[in-house]
Length: 172
Image (cartoon, rainbow, N blue to C red; front, side, top):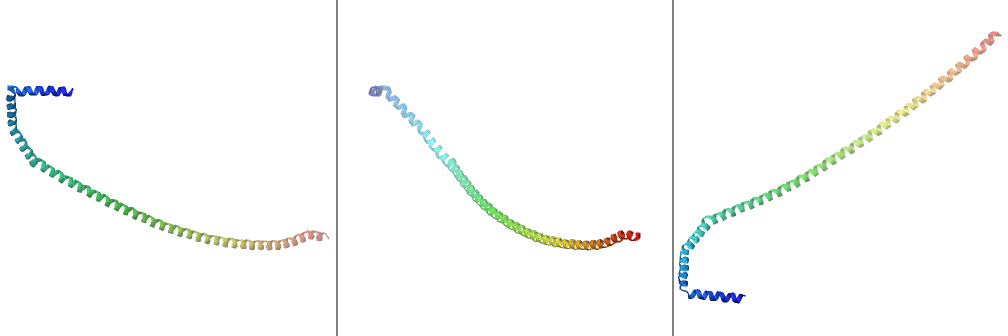
């Protein structure tokens, strides 16, 4: 199919070259090309003007903006790193302060426990002394009461003997 199309194209082109209108058409094309030269020159001039008046300043502004943005990003990264370092330092100092407070609380707690133990031992000692003194007092009171009761028992026994024997003597 391609060889047949090629043959058809060649035959058709050859006929056009031999025709008298071909030269006129070629001259028309050359005229169009010569008419396009000012357009090409104007487009080239327009491109040069655009490149110098618009594109270069725009590119310069964009590069400056990019450098400022990158500088701001770097500055913000440095600020973030500094803030993180300050935060870590603050947290470390906070941990140390908490540990110091905890140690102080533990010391006070131990001192309070020691004071309470000492006070409790003293209270037990005093209570034991009071119990011993009370036992001695109770023992003395018991002995005194027993002696008084024995004395009264003897007196009562004599009184009973006297009263029991007295009516009998009175009757004799």
